[in-house]
Image (cartoon, one colour):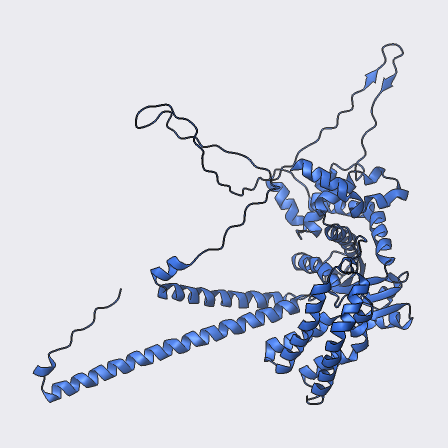
Length: 532
């Protein structure tokens, strides 16, 4: 409520001393109000500055979080986010109090998107309670109507399929015939292919540990021990291993690959502690260069990060490897069988961190120059390799030459030990490999294809905390390979795994290629349309 203004006394009736006292009192009151306004303004400015600082810290920690095994960063993020939420809630409340009703009524909400057409519809009709006209008692007839839609969730069901095989006897000779028992994905297991696929996707696609899945099934009245679920996961990984090997062969016959790795905490047997294993990923995806070859990703696990592991992984590959500056790749490049193509995203990220932390003018200019290269890439995505190479040499090459000259001039003005100088030297030290994409239209400007593939590992690592053993890391690599390849080919990974698990036990091993995601895409699309 706004306080009413105090009425002034009759100034003509006041003597000089009373008038002087009134002026002094009014001046003191105005000074107090001005100090209060300045204090509130300083508090608001301080709070806004703290909010921006917290947002910067959280963004920096989130970038650090990728690839970290410690939970320390996670706890720091949670604490900062709690403080940020508190500050923003207070700012929001005060902002709402200052807004007038007219301003609130002028706010327009964005248009709501229609609900997906492919979802099944259930029509519920609500008839009026009146059976006759409430005014004259006349007969009512249909006159249009109103319809609206809500999105509802129907709880998933677990069902039991009873497999009955009648025995038939011949009336003349007493011969008995009976259908053979249908095969199961895992021998002597009660799990059907749909349930197995759901367990696998929940663990490796939705990042639900097995003990949480056991709790969910218990709410449905189904008692499935975590050990039982673990046996199913191990059995499926063994069953699907020939398919994973087929994916690996498909990936390795490419002439260009994206490669990267990430740490995975693994329980060290007998010590009660964790060691650091590695998950490596190799991606074949030539769609940006107009190639229709099916994309695929192959993951593999190693107990450490020694350079011998990528040497073994890539023993059958020859071509160009798009990767970061990991020193373990150097011996591979020395053979001459594999060429290095460096990643511009890594160069840009170093300058971006500098810009976020220090508002460095050098970092800002570097980011803007690199953005010009990416703008050209967005225009030529999907074109043929020849056209991409021609446009890059015509438009990107001059920008790169100018960027190199500017980096060399800038480096001479910087302290050798500064972070900015380190970022500049990182770019100049890999310049030949950074230029390689201009001479080969099949190459990409960065290694984001591999980094996108590894995101699923980072999410799973956050939920699982650690893998139970080296065998668990190998199982994870196998499932990430199939799930990632299904996604790259536009398939629902759970539907794909259900289809594969329903037939792989009886499928001839010499025709295992028939079960690759792109070879089942048409069949799964038909089933999906029928279900809809």
